Amino acid sequence: MPYGYTGRILRVDLSGGTTSVDTMGDLFYRKYLGGAGFISYFLLKELKPGIDPLGPENKLIFALGPVTGVPLSGSGRNCIGAKSPLTGGYTKSEVGGFWGAELKHAGYDAIIVEGKAEKPVYLWIEDGVVSIKDANHLWGKNTKETQDIIRDELGDDLIRVAAIGPAGENLVRIACIMNDLKDAAGRGGTGAVMGSKNLKAVAVRGHSRPEVADPGRLGEFRQWLLANRQLWASFAEFGTGAAMASTIGTGNIPVRNFQNGEFAEISNISADTVKDTIRIKMEACYACSVRCKKVVKVEKPYSVDPEYGGPEYETLAAIGSNCGVSDLKAVAKGHELCGAYSLDTIATGDTIAFAMECFENGLLTTEDTGGIELKFGNAEAMLQIIELIARRQGIGNLLAEGTARAAKKIGKGAEDFAMHVKGVEIPMHEPRLKAVLGLGYVVNPHGADHCANLHDTMLSQEGPPLERFKSLGILGPLPADDLGPQKVAIFRNVHLFRIVQDSLVFCQFVPYDSEQMADILAAVTGWKTGIVEMLRIAERTLTMARLFNIREGLTADDDKLPKRFFEPKKDGVLSTRHYDAEQLEKAKGYYYTLMGWDGKTGVPTPEKLEELGIE
Image (cartoon, rainbow, N blue to C red; front, side):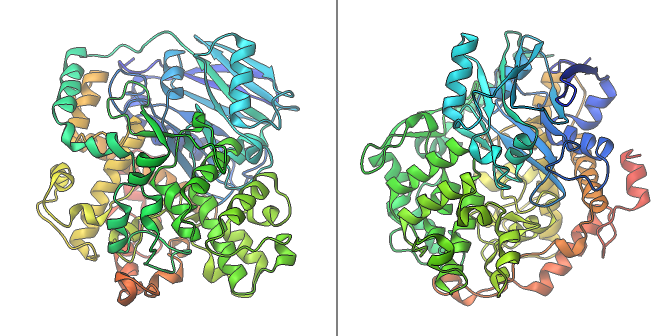
């Protein structure tokens, strides 16, 4: 067994109320690594084709990586995957905090949850011992109430809890899973999958750190990070979302459902303003020096509980500028509500912005909204809709289905206002500015994703971001709007590197480059490994995810952007620029070819499957 792993994968059959342990060999770990690799393997291998994502045959997988739980900055994350209730295909999402490290310390590399409990339950895992416990008294509670009750009845305030709130219970398709109240496995609807299984929470406590092959080498990486604080100092000072008043000038920040580029009040919701007004401290995930997590407190006119942390960039933009809302305290309250109910803030913001545009164009009326004036800029309406979505009440029952399904039901051209890829709502980054980012949105197997992606502006000028990726073959700056073959090839390498990080499972904010990541993997596991092996693991992971989607009926036609991006914004710097549809199709085909997939259909070739060892 390689260092860094426990060699044990926990299976929980909720239908039968039983648990078991799979012991995995060295080859399995080296071939799939962890995190996203585990999820691709188990979903493709074990799910029957065509199952209902919200039925008992779906599997909810909590997967760690070899660095999870190792005392190293960035090692506090875990990955969660399932068949998505939004896309009908593959989904996975990474999440920080302390829960993943605690599960590794409790003796497991992953949990595979199968079936459906007859009544609400939660899992209790302590140092390898697993119990399925009654959760009737927790059903209907928000995530903080759930965590507090579990810790109280088990008698330990250091228990780490991954839980859903009412949104997950109500099978809201944009529901997420919350770690430690502050960290969300947000994308793809995994919270709804958890709710469909009557699983309220997974509580963990462990006391055994994994052994590593070369502790001294890991100590050198810790010292390197501290010596290079300038590479991550902005995260430590502001978290994400700093200098939004400057960023709005590039056109990257979405305004009013990605229609506009100008938002005069943008400085009101910037992380700089958060720091100066409502922030009380910064916190960290497990063993991390960066400490990038905001904690805010508001008393009037809304009461915002600091236990839920604070809004990061995606939230500031999603329920802020994208909804036309400039009231920072309302945005902070919306963030708290999403954490309490277990809602993905990106999808929630996009869905509300979609509904606002429908309302302003007469596709929805006050009769539909229960009297709510659902207009851009109405902060109170934004907060009311979050509540309704979480509880599936009134108009919230429609919007709880996500933008794609809601648009189809509304009809009358509402599809033009639905900003999604494969059913997953678009993150807060603009493809009309960042050309390859748009390609990444369409080819990611789990839908629009800004994390397993390349942000073109990082490579448009010399500096630390570009320097970090030079070991992946990037030798000089490239224009942000370039979508030619060279840029596509670079995107492929960076995309693979991101999947490596999602398999390790390692935080992207810690600025190690690909060579350092290979050295960290070697120091943890004892393998003689390098960049080439890591990228091939990522190829295997993405190809298996592609196969899963194809099996579930997704095709190259689903790899597309909303047509809004092929038109200029109504104002701002991008009012004279639009995404080139023909260029995107060429880039997509070239990416397929580089991946060893058919250039037109995106179907992996038999030769590529044999090369990667995929049966």
